[in-house]
Length: 606
Image (cartoon, rainbow, N blue to C red; front, side, top):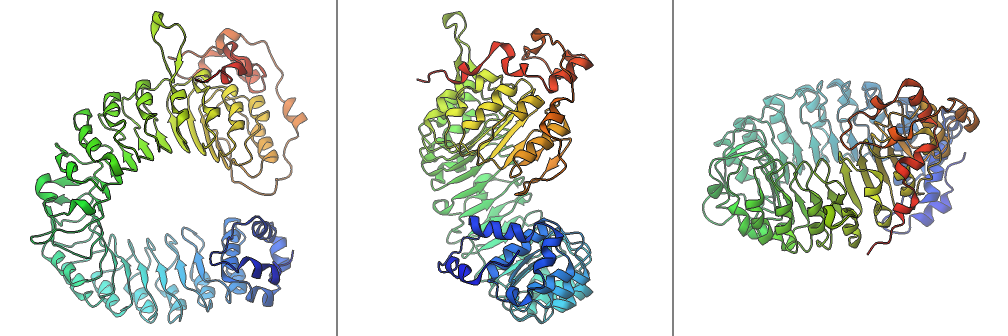
């Protein structure tokens, strides 16, 4: 394999934003990373690599890392072209890797977060680098104050993340020498009032993360001396009162005990506020000094707020998270009053019912994401959801939805509730842990914009899986805990766009059947308890053939009455003996379960 021709690279670089993910470039990168032998063939072309544009070199380096083909010595060939190196979580990265990275003359960004073998002495290799602007050492627990001294010679450094490292208050004080810092993450470190006082010289700071620090109400006043501060995290601290910080746009005080935000005088113009898990001593006083017309994002999840009257003045909210809070139907009207601009509403694990959803209907014209997981909403709520015209993502997992409304003797035919959602341009739908049967999902193939679908039911069979082939934009499909057979998976024709197929809990599947499926569709990542296969553009060898697969288990007679899935049944395996279970794996009978056939998926929809 030869490196991408220089003239073709220039064609792709004419635009301001080069599309690295174009098909041609992807094929070149995949060819270069096919195997260790392929790497050895091109690694000697050092002069060609030196001329490789940095976005292409960055992409090639990332792919080598994903394929586990990157070694310290191979890093050397990239020293003249790579600008961005992301090695986070790589357990093999140590001082040898850092020694090679120290020779990257154009390196601008280095991420070695969660690389636990990185020590303070290993950082000596990157000291004095002329172009390095960003370093992430988060959770590198062996990095101490001595390691920070090596970084002080990097005068170009603008972003530094050292959360949960071995730094002490003395090491934090050393950071005052890095005068160009605009982003500083000190989360989980012992930042005291005195240590913060030593950092006041960093007047360019815009982003400061102090979660879990030792800061007090007295020390927090020092934050007024950072004139450009726009993001501040004080989560998990003992701070109760925050002074007015007029440059502040984003504030995180999650898991704090809050008395007030903002002091006397002009109100703080916050745009985003996170108070998840916080205790509000007085909710009215907490929000008294905030300018509500600026607030577009509020995360008040996991809070014990008794009353939500403060919401009525926050008419600019676009994202509201009240999950796991005490809100119920009695307070939903307050959300409806401010619903005109809402785009994301999270009511997971709350007391909201279908009656509360009815109150919201027609008051959230711009809502795009609605989360109602772990609530008691049922199929009635779906009719109200259907009149929210811009919805693109819905989470109804772990609810009382059944997929149909039974009107009893007055209306003998079931009404399939999900058909009401056909008027929406849904892109994501989560229906996990809802005990659907195949016929309840008859309308889903008529959702042409659907990209992500998640199902988890012990009552679904091969029949449902086969009809997702018509979802031409589907990227992720979860089909968990289903009665899916080997034959059902073998005959499934996935959409060309499918990237992920989650079959965890499909207890009838064998490893051989899944390997055969991957051989045919190597571009799809497959998840199951027996096997977890990442996507690949090259089919693996030595997989069983279809003939080998189909001969593995002889068929036996199966009682079709057992295949009628009881809605109250837990583990479906308990209904069969060992021979019947083995036969089911390759059975073709699953497509005729309960006398259901393709007709239920072709029902006319009014």
